[in-house]
Length: 300
Image (cartoon, rainbow, N blue to C red; front, side, top):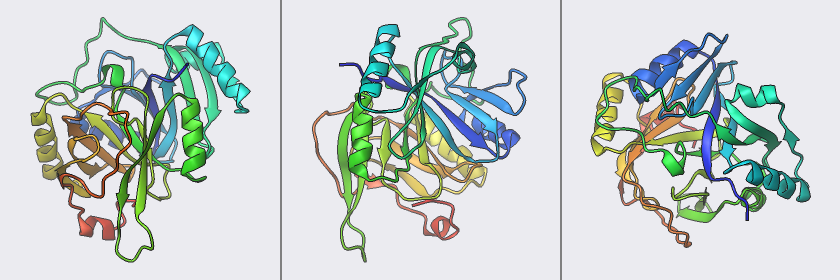
């Protein structure tokens, strides 16, 4: 059965392209590529032409997600599958595909009405090795697992959201059921995966923005420590201290970006288990910074 194979790229709208260029290179360690396009730049983390497109449109939010399918046959089959399920899909023009540096693209919206793109054939620049924006001990972990994961907003409930992403070939479910004082029932977080990465997209936290956080994974634990040191020295708020997640075993920490949502840098995640289980808290750490939350810097 046809499915998406990875989260290939993301489009981010920003208010300040210059602030994001500095943050991407000197805090995250990504490679910033400026090809002379007005109000746009690209961020690399491996051999792909890009993994992120930044556009200075004033939104400071997630604009779209780009999910990959294996090839032209899978692209055709996915189109048939989605239209057969009643999803409105538009095949992009050659110019639109070229704009994303892919061979073919289709555009649609998820159950909450947020833009999704499905593509095949990304441009891979084998002649242009990735050059990090700052010193790193190792590399970013991408490969078959895609660029990382994100938690995004949903507005129609878990059931409809799950059914849509199941159409894309994803699977998953509730992985955290967290009791909170004062709430009648626990707070649930739903995670879905499409490859060996424990999750590619997750849903649950409320907020005004479409995106809660973006996670990028590194191959060296030392790069988590180095990033934490850089973030602290830069005075960037850290809403969640270093710790290890119970679901994917990722050791990570969370910190703010210029758009007012969070980035997470992590290491050591296990592969997806493909079996349902849930947790009430993380293995250790990830203590929230109450002062940061009170300032309204974290949308949870």
